[in-house]
Length: 424
Ligand code: GLY
Image 1 (cartoon, rainbow, N blue to C red):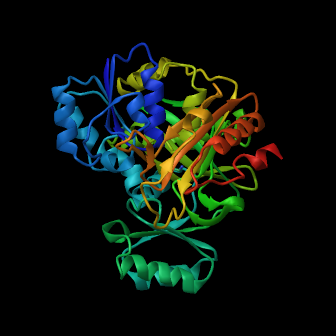
Image 2 (image 1 turned 90 degrees about the vertical axis):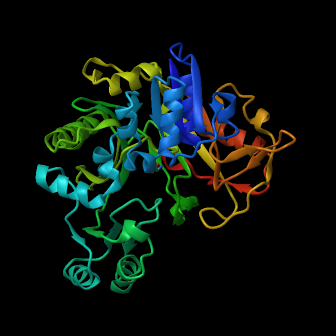
């Protein structure tokens, strides 16, 4: 089977690494890819938002499966255009990707179908938004409706902070069109955890559990990022809780999307809050694999990924049984100094072979490119995902940090507390 992966991050490297190992994969392309992905796939220089060029390439090369990594091309309708061209694509249509593309759509869906989430209202006028904030208690959560590259959420702890966030989005267009509408919702107390399921339009199959770290510095300090590390399994997600999440959140959402004539196919990523009473509530949906959660999930996947993705696209997940290795996996993201603010590109990264000298360690590339002399150069904010397997999260953690310490990259940094809480 000829397969095209769309994207250039650590998530897409782990997808390519896993797909390339499948006996069903004859030829693997990635658009646009990165220096690490180039070791698994032929990289083609097409940007993820160049939908006509991606469709033309898939037609020209007789691609039989396109796997779309990031959310932006999904929300922009890449899967719709591939469907029209008769090319099998893993990921939701634009109508179904509204679960991530519009926070307001998702909240309305939850309200209509009784899916547990925080109380909310939608606003396009600052005065009405400010008045609503004064009726609720603090802290309060203010979210841009559309895609804002992970920056569109403010947890306001004072009325002044809430007013600034409302004015920034609705009056100063801080998030452009993505912030022209706001969702304001009550803050939920509890423990956050991610939950992933493959969905084929009608059936859903849960993936293994995973936990990520969103803040940039140790002890959850500093600004939010795309994710600074992850581990799987997440001890918080017991089998009993996973069954509740499927019955109370995932399956009702899949049925609701079918009823709304927006059947969802692809991977549904639920950000959940487990309340102090132990009840799962939806914080938000994403319509793609998490990054770096994908890296730890795929390190643990025993079943063939090509078969699983094709079953999802072809609507036959109902009879599918995913198997996982019992080992734990843990990923440490190494980023360029300055991330998630501004950072320099082009610093040289050494020691990658030494880092991977442990057979249970894989270094996924998130933002790298090859220099003229063959050196590996940093080319982004999040640059590497050093990922290890171990018989426990503690063992995986020790291996991953030992590998990090073999990497020679003075301009890079990482959190030092990934998995620490679980081990303690
Ligand atoms: N790790 C968070 C995300 O992928 O959105």
